Length: 313
Image 1 (cartoon, rainbow, N blue to C red):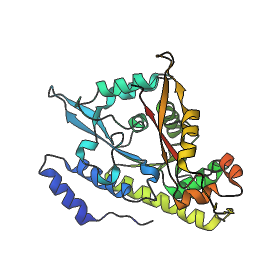
Image 2 (spheres, one colour; image 1 turned 30 degrees about the vertical axis):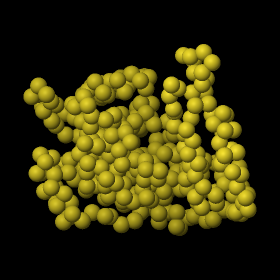
Image 3 (cartoon, rainbow, N blue to C red; image 1 turned 180 degrees about the vertical axis):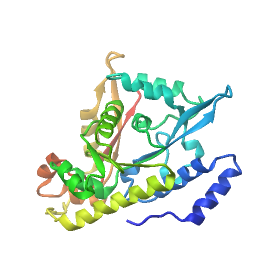
């Protein structure tokens, strides 16, 4: 993988942003976030986030340390300054003393500490960025990295691929628990370049936008080289001659995934399903060893079904 950094383009964006009152660090954060977001090998399913720690004057004129992090749902490839809500950093870091915190409570604290109360919600992984001390942090779901770490021996493979430059964090769902685990491991091991989040992705950091970005490119390149040296095809695929019509499958899947609404008697929380049938998806589903690789946690090229909570009206 090659770096997409072009100094002329970076400085041109800095100059354009300056006309709107956007400082050069945020401008370069925007620039590298777009570079990451435009490479499909880095942001599978649109996932990933970036951040910047800096200082800003709040509405009372007081200078405070803030975390600017990609907003939840913002598209990295076309992000603008508004896609990086600013959150007071000190209250977030105080949360590390807690053993756990409910998601709604955490979101409420985050929103209460937004510099602009009308800003969009920060990324669900805000606490990971808040707890780590680095000024610039990049997180992607790089395909080559997932091919290494989504294995039963992912930690050993990671050590071989990255030579100890990235600390390995065991799998936890994204959120507060993962952030606490990650900072504990970081402080114990002090990796030079970043973190591996098991079955999830990779984190790199730096003192400026270019350093964090190019570390990401370097680490993903190491992963690509490792896969090329050690990878071997184990797939035995057969293309199904017929696919059951979606109209016949959707009601069954939707019913199986529905949850009873505890607040309203006789009501159910329904889901909206998005079916995908790209060639890569079908190739994976048609594997004769599908059960084995699914149990092993091998990264799939795409999700077959994406679900979204749909409020009951």
